[in-house]
Amino acid sequence: MGSFSIWHWLIVLVVVLLLFGRGKIPELMGDVAKGIKSFKKGMTDDDATPTSDKGLDGKTVEHKSDEVR
Image (tube, rainbow, N blue to C red):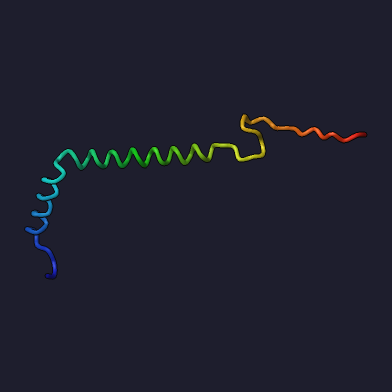
């Protein structure tokens, strides 16, 4: 029950290759990398949006009061 021998690891490797195939594992890792890149791009796009008190089009909205002078 202690450690695994080389035969145990070879059997596990063969089972993994049979389940996923030779080309499936690199394809899966490529999809993960694309997901990470798009997540990072989305995070930088959110940081680029203005957070000031300007209007939606980026112009300042001025308020005219109805005071009588």
